[in-house]
Amino acid sequence: MDNKFNKINEAKDYIFSKLKEAPEIGLILGSGLGELADKIENEVKIPYHEIPHFPVSTVEGHKGQLVIGTLEGKRVVAMQGRFHYYEGYTMSEVTFPVYVMKALGVKMLFVTNACGGMNKAFAPGDLMIINDHINFTGANPLIGPNMNEFGPRFPDMSRAYDYELIQLAQKVALDKGIKIQNGVYVAISGPNYMTPAELKMLARLGADTVGMSTVPEVIVANHAKMRVLGISLITDMAIGEELEPLTHEQVMAVAEKSKTKFIELVRGILYEVDLA
Ligand code: R1P
Image (cartoon, rainbow, N blue to C red; front, side, top):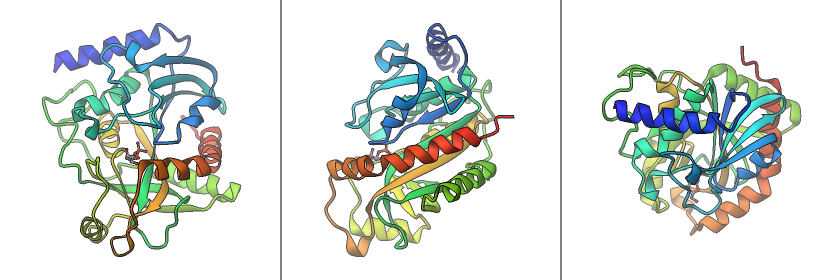
């Protein structure tokens, strides 16, 4: 495990060598939501392939670079493109950047995604604050020797999503007149979308949305004692009884249409968030 710790530090040192100031908040941008990183000012862009030990993005809608700079007065590091288990990476590789962010000094992580809505009260284009999650990927990024430098062997998950950040996100949405849902996100491995029978099962388990990301990153962020905010954009309805065929192009098209309010919400939260 020393080896992984060394790799994290090598990646961190490389990124630091390009920066004047350390970032405070990490942003992981979901499918079709990468445009938020284009709003970052005084930015330094680092393609993933330049960073020692970083994986590279292989999914459409995930550009594959870090954008580090200032947004709404906060020093941020954004992942314009994330890694997914179904791309063939191990869970350790999928979540490697989260530990690198922590090593850079990031205390707070905003994770975002495009997902399917299973709650019948939701509609495509809705934004949802993630209150809690279910790890249904069949894997866990913390399996293996524990990195004691970051956190304990058995991390607590009773408050995986920071309550104060949830409250702030709801307040900002209300102030800006942005409709917001709240709920549970279940992560599956993908890459195929779910069958009707699988969706009926996941809904019975208590999930409101379903996707193929986010949960591994949130587990690692909690291990490393980062405060987490999760925001989902519902791009399609994933209700077993009423399921329509779905393509990634449709997911991207809905993300494209809804990105303006997503960007407005995240910028509003960044503006108001207290880092103390
Ligand atoms: C499927 O359309 C892809 O979109 C979502 C799913 O997880 C999957 O990768 O991407 P993000 O979760 O990265 O937003």
